[in-house]
Amino acid sequence: MRKLMVCVLLLLGLTVPAAAQEATPAVPAFPPDGSRYALVEVASGFERPVFVIGANDGRERLFIVEQGGRIWIIQDGATLPSPFLDVSALVSRDANERGLLGLAFDPNYAENGQFFINYTDVNGDTAVLRYRVSTDDPNQADPNSAEYVIRVGQPYPNHNGGDIAFGPDGYLYVGMGDGGSAGDPQRHGQDPQSLLGKMLRLDVDGGTPYAIPADNPYVNDPRLLPEIWAIGLRNPWRFSFDRETGDLYIADVGQNQWEEVSFQPADSPGGENYGWNIMEGTHRYSGEPVIEGLTPPFAEYNHSQGCSVTGGYVYHGAVLPDLQGVYLFADYCSGLIWASARDTDGAWQTSLFKESGLVVSSFGQDDSGELYVVHHGGGIWKLVAAG
Image (cartoon, rainbow, N blue to C red):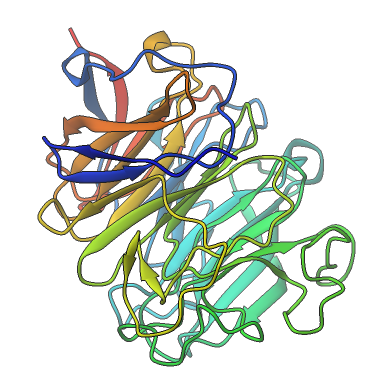
């Protein structure tokens, strides 16, 4: 394990603790020159879009998630006239952070047609459902195929998490916020018997509605719920797996001062405690005693530079070779985009990449690994070479 180091980036005011894990083999040139890249709008007219993703089924489509409950398809540069799925009647839209929040395609979607959504239902509670594509139209989901995977009660209308993604292990990961209000008043982040404030890991193929993976960290520990993969999260709005290494990046929205991004290596057995609400980033938050073994973020920034972190992806596309292995993330309020990577010594480096001018609600990848930015005001933008 490497010693914890702190690199203060004077230009940005970012505090970037070094990773405790070993460096990945590929070390990209850093920092990337943001002026060599541009964001180009590829689609517009969406209502509060929150996610974009490819299905990895060979059809080269983009699926756009609207917070109000519709999923649209962009095919051959045009948005199809009918939504892929419309669950607007099922979701609650009475608060800024509620709605249809996440979409994940089964790793075997090309064969089984299964995909999963995460939304807050009409009661405001989290619901993760399994759907299937229509048997006669690849651009239409079967609305009657819905099956509940898991429901989690939400005591307040904010901090719902909402992201879901399949890991390289084939299990479904579900990011759960702490249940809301401010400061985690019900202490869900550190509560071993609550699914709130956690990263969950579910085997959606091994049981009905799911099974517990045999190697989840708390399977044999009755003090913690077996669905839990990691604890101590406030609101992991967006997280992602490196499509080449399998490493996990979790962007956790902060309270009043600090936004953070944490790293979990692909060979982790799980069980990390990311600190909330004892810590906000690398800073003490509550009066709770500090627990040994908390996992600090590798990047954080204060609210002089934004208000809400939006996690992104490690770039592994083919069009922008100098960005290979670089992780990009942003702030929802300021539109600033940062780049992070580890140097040859394994220490994290983070620098300002670009001022987007967008309200960045999410990033996304297409089937080829090219990177997109979602503007909550209605557009989808692609990262390209400038010029």
